[in-house]
Length: 361
Ligand SMILES: Cc1cc2nc3c(=O)[nH]c(=O)nc-3n(C[C@H](O)[C@H](O)[C@H](O)COP(=O)(O)O)c2cc1C
Image 1 (tube, protein in one colour):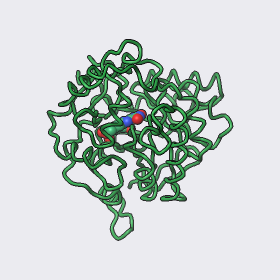
Image 2 (cartoon, helix red, strand yellow; image 1 turned 135 degrees about the horizontal axis):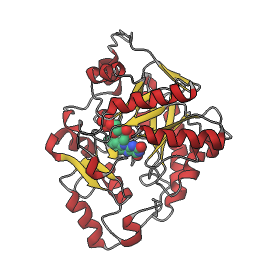
Image 3 (tube, rainbow, N blue to C red; image 1 turned 135 degrees about the vertical axis):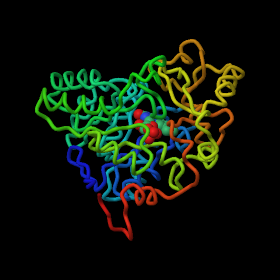
Image 4 (cartoon, rainbow, N blue to C red; image 1 turned 180 degrees about the vertical axis):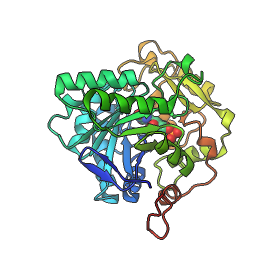
Protein backbone atom coordinates (compact mmCIF):
# COMPACT_ATOMS: atom_id res chain seq x y z
CA UNK A 1 0.00 0.00 0.00
CA UNK A 2 1.45 3.36 -1.00
CA UNK A 3 0.31 6.09 1.35
CA UNK A 4 0.33 9.87 1.04
CA UNK A 5 2.98 12.14 2.46
CA UNK A 6 2.65 14.74 5.20
CA UNK A 7 5.43 17.28 5.64
CA UNK A 8 4.72 19.79 8.39
CA UNK A 9 1.20 21.15 7.78
CA UNK A 10 1.03 19.90 4.21
CA UNK A 11 -0.30 16.59 2.94
CA UNK A 12 -0.28 15.21 -0.61
CA UNK A 13 -1.91 12.00 -1.87
CA UNK A 14 1.36 10.55 -3.22
CA UNK A 15 4.76 10.25 -1.52
CA UNK A 16 6.58 12.12 -4.27
CA UNK A 17 8.49 15.37 -4.37
CA UNK A 18 9.60 16.60 -7.80
CA UNK A 19 13.17 17.71 -7.16
CA UNK A 20 14.04 21.35 -7.79
CA UNK A 21 16.00 21.74 -11.03
CA UNK A 22 17.85 24.95 -11.77
CA UNK A 23 18.23 26.95 -13.88
CA UNK A 24 14.52 27.14 -14.73
CA UNK A 25 14.21 23.44 -15.57
CA UNK A 26 11.59 23.18 -12.84
CA UNK A 27 9.68 26.43 -12.98
CA UNK A 28 5.99 27.15 -12.50
CA UNK A 29 4.74 24.86 -15.23
CA UNK A 30 6.43 21.66 -14.10
CA UNK A 31 5.95 22.31 -10.39
CA UNK A 32 2.32 23.34 -10.90
CA UNK A 33 1.47 20.20 -12.88
CA UNK A 34 3.22 17.91 -10.39
CA UNK A 35 1.24 19.54 -7.58
CA UNK A 36 -1.96 19.18 -9.61
CA UNK A 37 -1.24 15.47 -10.08
CA UNK A 38 -0.91 14.97 -6.32
CA UNK A 39 2.81 15.31 -5.63
CA UNK A 40 4.84 18.17 -4.21
CA UNK A 41 5.98 20.52 -6.97
CA UNK A 42 9.25 22.34 -6.45
CA UNK A 43 10.36 25.49 -8.25
CA UNK A 44 14.15 25.86 -8.37
CA UNK A 45 15.11 29.36 -7.32
CA UNK A 46 18.70 29.38 -8.62
CA UNK A 47 19.02 31.93 -11.44
CA UNK A 48 15.24 32.02 -11.96
CA UNK A 49 15.37 35.66 -13.04
CA UNK A 50 17.71 35.12 -15.98
CA UNK A 51 15.26 33.90 -18.61
CA UNK A 52 12.48 36.15 -17.34
CA UNK A 53 11.04 39.46 -18.55
CA UNK A 54 12.51 41.12 -15.44
CA UNK A 55 16.16 40.57 -16.41
CA UNK A 56 17.82 43.49 -18.22
CA UNK A 57 21.39 42.15 -18.27
CA UNK A 58 22.49 43.89 -15.10
CA UNK A 59 19.86 43.31 -12.40
CA UNK A 60 20.47 39.64 -11.57
CA UNK A 61 19.41 39.74 -7.91
CA UNK A 62 16.38 41.97 -8.36
CA UNK A 63 15.12 39.96 -11.34
CA UNK A 64 15.54 36.74 -9.33
CA UNK A 65 13.18 37.96 -6.62
CA UNK A 66 10.58 39.28 -9.07
CA UNK A 67 10.69 36.17 -11.24
CA UNK A 68 10.42 33.83 -8.25
CA UNK A 69 7.23 35.59 -7.14
CA UNK A 70 5.80 35.24 -10.67
CA UNK A 71 6.69 31.55 -10.82
CA UNK A 72 5.02 30.78 -7.49
CA UNK A 73 1.90 32.69 -8.52
CA UNK A 74 1.73 30.89 -11.88
CA UNK A 75 2.25 27.48 -10.25
CA UNK A 76 -0.74 28.10 -7.98
CA UNK A 77 -2.80 29.13 -11.01
CA UNK A 78 -2.20 25.59 -12.30
CA UNK A 79 -2.74 23.90 -8.92
CA UNK A 80 -4.68 26.26 -6.63
CA UNK A 81 -4.90 23.69 -3.81
CA UNK A 82 -1.59 22.00 -4.53
CA UNK A 83 1.57 21.91 -2.47
CA UNK A 84 4.23 24.08 -4.08
CA UNK A 85 7.67 24.56 -2.60
CA UNK A 86 10.91 26.27 -3.54
CA UNK A 87 14.41 24.82 -3.73
CA UNK A 88 16.89 27.34 -2.36
CA UNK A 89 20.61 26.58 -2.60
CA UNK A 90 22.64 27.67 0.41
CA UNK A 91 25.59 28.38 -1.89
CA UNK A 92 23.90 31.31 -3.68
CA UNK A 93 24.75 34.88 -2.70
CA UNK A 94 21.12 35.96 -2.32
CA UNK A 95 20.06 32.92 -0.26
CA UNK A 96 18.49 34.88 2.62
CA UNK A 97 16.48 37.15 0.29
CA UNK A 98 15.34 34.26 -1.88
CA UNK A 99 14.11 32.24 1.11
CA UNK A 100 12.16 35.22 2.44
CA UNK A 101 10.71 36.04 -0.99
CA UNK A 102 9.61 32.41 -1.43
CA UNK A 103 7.80 32.45 1.91
CA UNK A 104 6.16 35.82 1.22
CA UNK A 105 4.92 34.56 -2.15
CA UNK A 106 3.26 31.50 -0.61
CA UNK A 107 5.73 28.62 -0.86
CA UNK A 108 4.57 25.83 1.44
CA UNK A 109 8.02 24.22 1.73
CA UNK A 110 11.60 25.36 1.48
CA UNK A 111 13.95 22.59 0.43
CA UNK A 112 17.55 23.57 0.88
CA UNK A 113 20.90 21.98 0.09
CA UNK A 114 24.23 22.75 -1.65
CA UNK A 115 25.59 23.61 1.78
CA UNK A 116 24.09 23.18 5.23
CA UNK A 117 21.05 25.45 5.76
CA UNK A 118 22.03 26.39 9.30
CA UNK A 119 20.12 29.70 9.47
CA UNK A 120 16.98 28.59 7.61
CA UNK A 121 14.61 28.61 10.64
CA UNK A 122 15.74 32.15 11.47
CA UNK A 123 14.92 33.36 7.97
CA UNK A 124 11.43 31.84 8.04
CA UNK A 125 10.48 32.68 11.61
CA UNK A 126 7.52 34.81 10.46
CA UNK A 127 6.16 31.90 8.41
CA UNK A 128 5.67 29.03 10.87
CA UNK A 129 3.52 27.01 8.44
CA UNK A 130 6.28 26.83 5.85
CA UNK A 131 7.83 23.36 6.12
CA UNK A 132 11.63 23.31 6.28
CA UNK A 133 13.42 20.46 4.53
CA UNK A 134 17.21 20.22 4.43
CA UNK A 135 18.99 18.10 1.83
CA UNK A 136 21.85 15.99 3.16
CA UNK A 137 24.02 13.14 1.94
CA UNK A 138 25.15 11.87 5.35
CA UNK A 139 23.79 11.18 8.83
CA UNK A 140 26.46 13.52 10.19
CA UNK A 141 25.13 16.47 8.18
CA UNK A 142 21.59 15.77 9.46
CA UNK A 143 22.93 15.69 13.03
CA UNK A 144 24.75 19.01 12.62
CA UNK A 145 21.62 20.68 11.25
CA UNK A 146 19.34 19.20 13.93
CA UNK A 147 21.59 20.31 16.79
CA UNK A 148 21.96 23.82 15.42
CA UNK A 149 18.24 24.23 14.69
CA UNK A 150 17.22 22.96 18.09
CA UNK A 151 19.69 25.08 20.01
CA UNK A 152 19.29 28.24 17.95
CA UNK A 153 15.63 28.10 16.99
CA UNK A 154 13.91 25.30 18.93
CA UNK A 155 12.88 23.78 15.61
CA UNK A 156 13.17 20.38 13.94
CA UNK A 157 13.27 19.80 10.21
CA UNK A 158 9.80 18.87 8.91
CA UNK A 159 11.41 16.28 6.63
CA UNK A 160 14.90 15.48 5.41
CA UNK A 161 15.88 14.70 1.81
CA UNK A 162 18.74 12.20 1.63
CA UNK A 163 20.42 12.69 -1.73
CA UNK A 164 22.53 9.91 -3.18
CA UNK A 165 25.72 11.36 -4.73
CA UNK A 166 26.17 8.19 -6.82
CA UNK A 167 23.00 8.78 -8.85
CA UNK A 168 21.49 12.27 -8.38
CA UNK A 169 21.76 15.11 -10.90
CA UNK A 170 23.12 18.60 -10.41
CA UNK A 171 25.49 19.62 -7.62
CA UNK A 172 26.44 16.81 -5.26
CA UNK A 173 27.28 16.94 -1.56
CA UNK A 174 30.24 14.57 -1.61
CA UNK A 175 33.92 14.83 -2.54
CA UNK A 176 34.61 14.02 -6.18
CA UNK A 177 37.00 11.18 -5.34
CA UNK A 178 34.40 9.42 -3.15
CA UNK A 179 31.62 9.41 -5.73
CA UNK A 180 31.14 6.03 -7.36
CA UNK A 181 33.64 4.38 -5.02
CA UNK A 182 31.02 1.89 -3.85
CA UNK A 183 31.36 3.11 -0.26
CA UNK A 184 28.10 5.03 -0.17
CA UNK A 185 24.87 3.25 0.71
CA UNK A 186 21.82 5.40 -0.07
CA UNK A 187 19.31 3.46 2.02
CA UNK A 188 21.65 2.90 4.92
CA UNK A 189 21.88 6.70 5.06
CA UNK A 190 18.08 7.01 4.82
CA UNK A 191 17.63 4.58 7.71
CA UNK A 192 20.46 6.20 9.66
CA UNK A 193 18.86 9.65 9.47
CA UNK A 194 15.46 8.18 10.40
CA UNK A 195 16.97 6.35 13.39
CA UNK A 196 18.89 9.43 14.51
CA UNK A 197 15.71 11.49 14.92
CA UNK A 198 13.77 8.60 16.47
CA UNK A 199 16.44 7.60 18.95
CA UNK A 200 17.78 11.01 19.89
CA UNK A 201 14.58 13.05 19.91
CA UNK A 202 11.73 10.48 19.69
CA UNK A 203 10.68 12.25 16.50
CA UNK A 204 9.27 10.50 13.46
CA UNK A 205 10.39 12.74 10.64
CA UNK A 206 9.67 11.82 7.00
CA UNK A 207 12.89 10.88 5.23
CA UNK A 208 12.84 11.28 1.47
CA UNK A 209 15.19 9.35 -0.82
CA UNK A 210 16.55 11.33 -3.77
CA UNK A 211 18.64 10.01 -6.63
CA UNK A 212 18.18 7.15 -9.05
CA UNK A 213 14.43 6.71 -8.63
CA UNK A 214 12.93 6.32 -12.10
CA UNK A 215 10.03 3.89 -12.16
CA UNK A 216 7.49 2.15 -9.95
CA UNK A 217 9.95 -0.63 -9.06
CA UNK A 218 12.46 1.99 -7.85
CA UNK A 219 9.73 3.75 -5.87
CA UNK A 220 8.58 0.53 -4.19
CA UNK A 221 12.21 -0.36 -3.45
CA UNK A 222 12.80 3.02 -1.80
CA UNK A 223 9.70 2.61 0.38
CA UNK A 224 10.67 -0.97 1.31
CA UNK A 225 14.13 0.22 2.24
CA UNK A 226 12.77 2.67 4.78
CA UNK A 227 12.13 5.90 2.87
CA UNK A 228 8.84 7.70 3.55
CA UNK A 229 8.84 9.16 0.05
CA UNK A 230 11.01 9.88 -2.95
CA UNK A 231 12.34 12.98 -4.64
CA UNK A 232 12.55 12.53 -8.41
CA UNK A 233 14.03 15.04 -10.82
CA UNK A 234 15.55 13.63 -14.04
CA UNK A 235 12.39 11.64 -14.79
CA UNK A 236 10.39 14.87 -15.07
CA UNK A 237 12.65 16.53 -17.67
CA UNK A 238 11.16 14.72 -20.64
CA UNK A 239 7.63 15.92 -19.96
CA UNK A 240 5.56 18.36 -21.98
CA UNK A 241 5.27 20.50 -18.87
CA UNK A 242 9.00 20.76 -18.01
CA UNK A 243 10.13 24.37 -18.32
CA UNK A 244 13.28 23.64 -20.38
CA UNK A 245 13.63 24.26 -24.13
CA UNK A 246 12.87 21.20 -26.30
CA UNK A 247 16.62 20.96 -27.14
CA UNK A 248 17.39 20.31 -23.45
CA UNK A 249 14.86 17.48 -23.39
CA UNK A 250 16.30 16.20 -26.67
CA UNK A 251 19.74 15.98 -25.03
CA UNK A 252 18.21 13.57 -22.48
CA UNK A 253 16.45 11.57 -25.21
CA UNK A 254 19.70 11.19 -27.16
CA UNK A 255 22.17 10.50 -24.35
CA UNK A 256 23.67 7.12 -23.51
CA UNK A 257 24.85 5.93 -20.08
CA UNK A 258 28.49 6.73 -20.98
CA UNK A 259 27.64 10.35 -21.81
CA UNK A 260 26.63 11.02 -18.20
CA UNK A 261 29.43 11.85 -15.80
CA UNK A 262 30.90 14.15 -13.23
CA UNK A 263 32.18 17.67 -13.73
CA UNK A 264 33.78 19.99 -11.22
CA UNK A 265 31.60 23.05 -10.73
CA UNK A 266 33.16 26.46 -10.04
CA UNK A 267 31.04 26.31 -6.86
CA UNK A 268 33.63 23.88 -5.50
CA UNK A 269 31.22 20.95 -5.65
CA UNK A 270 31.11 18.09 -8.11
CA UNK A 271 28.10 17.95 -10.39
CA UNK A 272 26.54 15.31 -12.61
CA UNK A 273 25.80 16.27 -16.20
CA UNK A 274 25.89 15.23 -19.82
CA UNK A 275 29.61 15.70 -20.05
CA UNK A 276 30.41 15.55 -23.78
CA UNK A 277 30.47 19.32 -24.32
CA UNK A 278 32.26 20.38 -21.12
CA UNK A 279 35.24 21.67 -23.16
CA UNK A 280 32.95 23.92 -25.20
CA UNK A 281 31.27 25.13 -21.99
CA UNK A 282 34.65 26.12 -20.54
CA UNK A 283 36.06 27.40 -23.84
CA UNK A 284 33.17 29.82 -24.30
CA UNK A 285 33.92 31.73 -21.13
CA UNK A 286 37.70 31.56 -21.71
CA UNK A 287 37.24 33.00 -25.19
CA UNK A 288 34.99 35.81 -24.03
CA UNK A 289 37.30 36.48 -21.09
CA UNK A 290 34.32 37.92 -19.26
CA UNK A 291 34.52 38.74 -15.59
CA UNK A 292 31.85 37.19 -13.36
CA UNK A 293 28.63 38.67 -14.77
CA UNK A 294 26.23 38.14 -11.87
CA UNK A 295 28.00 37.28 -8.62
CA UNK A 296 25.42 34.54 -8.11
CA UNK A 297 27.49 32.31 -5.77
CA UNK A 298 29.02 33.10 -2.41
CA UNK A 299 32.10 31.08 -3.34
CA UNK A 300 33.03 30.55 -6.98
CA UNK A 301 36.35 29.85 -8.68
CA UNK A 302 35.17 31.69 -11.78
CA UNK A 303 34.27 34.76 -9.75
CA UNK A 304 37.53 34.79 -7.78
CA UNK A 305 40.06 33.89 -10.50
CA UNK A 306 38.17 33.05 -13.72
CA UNK A 307 38.82 29.34 -13.28
CA UNK A 308 36.49 26.91 -15.05
CA UNK A 309 33.32 28.67 -16.27
CA UNK A 310 30.31 30.68 -15.15
CA UNK A 311 27.89 28.02 -13.95
CA UNK A 312 24.65 29.99 -13.76
CA UNK A 313 24.93 31.28 -17.31
CA UNK A 314 26.03 27.85 -18.59
CA UNK A 315 22.90 26.31 -17.05
CA UNK A 316 20.76 29.20 -18.32
CA UNK A 317 22.03 28.71 -21.88
CA UNK A 318 21.15 25.02 -21.77
CA UNK A 319 17.66 25.82 -20.47
CA UNK A 320 17.16 28.15 -23.46
CA UNK A 321 18.21 25.41 -25.86
CA UNK A 322 21.94 26.02 -26.40
CA UNK A 323 23.15 22.52 -25.61
CA UNK A 324 26.49 23.19 -27.34
CA UNK A 325 27.87 25.71 -24.89
CA UNK A 326 25.26 25.17 -22.18
CA UNK A 327 25.55 22.68 -19.33
CA UNK A 328 22.90 19.94 -19.13
CA UNK A 329 22.66 18.63 -15.58
CA UNK A 330 21.15 15.16 -15.18
CA UNK A 331 21.06 12.10 -12.96
CA UNK A 332 22.54 8.72 -13.93
CA UNK A 333 19.14 7.54 -15.19
CA UNK A 334 18.62 10.28 -17.79
CA UNK A 335 19.51 7.90 -20.65
CA UNK A 336 16.33 5.95 -19.86
CA UNK A 337 14.13 8.75 -21.23
CA UNK A 338 12.79 7.62 -24.58
CA UNK A 339 9.87 9.93 -25.25
CA UNK A 340 8.18 13.09 -24.09
CA UNK A 341 5.20 12.29 -21.89
CA UNK A 342 2.79 14.20 -19.67
CA UNK A 343 3.39 14.61 -15.93
CA UNK A 344 0.12 12.76 -15.34
CA UNK A 345 1.43 9.76 -17.34
CA UNK A 346 4.35 9.45 -14.91
CA UNK A 347 1.99 9.55 -11.92
CA UNK A 348 -0.24 6.95 -13.57
CA UNK A 349 2.71 4.64 -14.07
CA UNK A 350 4.18 5.17 -10.61
CA UNK A 351 0.97 4.91 -8.65
CA UNK A 352 -1.02 2.63 -10.89
CA UNK A 353 -3.84 5.08 -11.44
CA UNK A 354 -6.55 3.98 -13.82
CA UNK A 355 -9.31 6.33 -14.97
CA UNK A 356 -8.31 8.84 -12.34
CA UNK A 357 -8.60 6.29 -9.50
CA UNK A 358 -5.56 5.22 -7.50
CA UNK A 359 -4.84 1.50 -7.59
CA UNK A 360 -2.57 1.21 -4.60
CA UNK A 361 -0.30 -1.61 -3.58
C1 LIG B 1 18.71 19.39 -14.36
C2 LIG B 1 18.86 19.26 -12.86
C3 LIG B 1 19.00 20.41 -12.10
C4 LIG B 1 19.07 20.33 -10.70
N1 LIG B 1 19.13 21.48 -9.98
C5 LIG B 1 19.08 21.43 -8.62
C6 LIG B 1 18.99 22.63 -7.86
O1 LIG B 1 18.90 23.75 -8.39
N2 LIG B 1 19.00 22.51 -6.50
C7 LIG B 1 19.05 21.27 -5.88
O2 LIG B 1 19.06 21.21 -4.64
N3 LIG B 1 19.11 20.13 -6.59
C8 LIG B 1 19.10 20.17 -7.94
N4 LIG B 1 19.09 19.00 -8.66
C9 LIG B 1 18.96 17.71 -7.94
C10 LIG B 1 17.49 17.21 -7.93
O3 LIG B 1 16.65 18.10 -7.25
C11 LIG B 1 17.32 15.80 -7.33
O4 LIG B 1 17.53 15.77 -5.95
C12 LIG B 1 18.16 14.72 -7.96
O5 LIG B 1 18.46 14.95 -9.30
C13 LIG B 1 17.40 13.40 -7.81
O6 LIG B 1 17.92 12.42 -8.61
P1 LIG B 1 17.24 11.96 -10.01
O7 LIG B 1 17.52 13.05 -10.96
O8 LIG B 1 17.94 10.67 -10.29
O9 LIG B 1 15.77 11.77 -9.77
C14 LIG B 1 19.04 19.06 -10.06
C15 LIG B 1 18.93 17.90 -10.84
C16 LIG B 1 18.82 17.99 -12.23
C17 LIG B 1 18.66 16.73 -13.02
